[in-house]
Length: 488
Image (cartoon, rainbow, N blue to C red; front, side, top):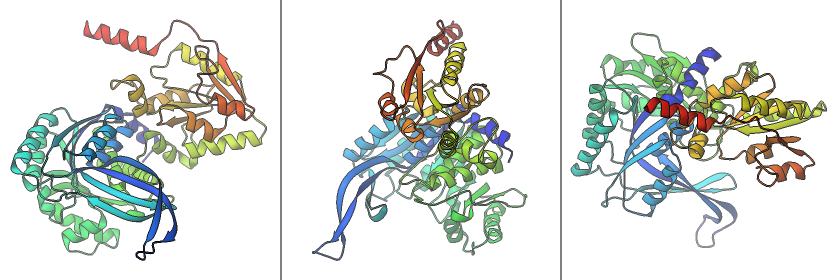
């Protein structure tokens, strides 16, 4: 797949609206160290140092979609317990996710607690119910998805076999989507794939396909043969089979199966990798790509996410960096690792590196002036831009106007900019600490005390430069004026 084609699809991610229905849960990671074996039993004693919570299951699919720039309606079931409150709090921090969760006092909110010591998972404890939801809850789910499907471009069923996607709920979801002319992607857990009849795409992993088909799936050819059986039965239109370290296979229609080799560089943690695949696949299709194009992006995303620890996500910026031919790209869009290496190389050549950052939504002359002045403050200029999810948190759910991909492409075309890197945090402090710029540049509307990272840069002997602003330009005011004109 050509880099330009990939960028075209990635640019469309922020326009996509995805309905996710399935088993939501909370993933809790308890981190610590093991220094001894318990005298009570031959088990390690974990000295707990910190705990981290994040959305899991279908909620992690939603989180992946949000971090990739998409907008999400999430339908699921929670209990009436503190875990539900914790999950709702995590989801509320993601402004592009609209959670429509149904509370059921008869069951607990699914909670997976992983104990990690010295970088290794030593135990997992699950608190959950796998019983099918009651008929009453099933009716409420069907009503919720019927109302939501009209608002979505594509529908994802995330089945973790925790009782939400019963046969009736699954059938209702697929039928509602079909009536509305929306495609359905299913991440299955049931060995009986007939449960998902009528889906557009089913995304089993190798083991799930083997168990469902009863056929060996050790090679891509065997995977294709096993998958073809379900297409012949008209169970679904296509299958995307994830093969772990071997990549993935795309099986559709009468076409020969398309095999995508792995894009993973190293594997630290496979937790939630399937959620990343289905999220990228859904956005790729919603953005206008064909199945192979969307699967290509999903394969790259999976290779990136397994190199992270915990239930992680990726961004379109990271995918762009991974896709850039030869690790570099003439349009100056780079991954964090590449930019960090470039900065070190520039510094070893005796060059000074400047850094500035912003949302850069609707680029205007004020931005150009700031970037030109920033470039004149050093030999090279790195620009950090807020990812879509970060802009939404800072500016509201209707921002950004342009996706992170579009903003990065526009910035990369500016002569004074030497590299562009996208960050997901609300401030660039972590990025600044990684890149260690010689000069930190912000507008004169800041003070030395309010510039994020100023203390770090000055502590290393660097400079903080406050440049003169070109008056009369404001992205927020422009957006407000355009909105007012449109409503009038």
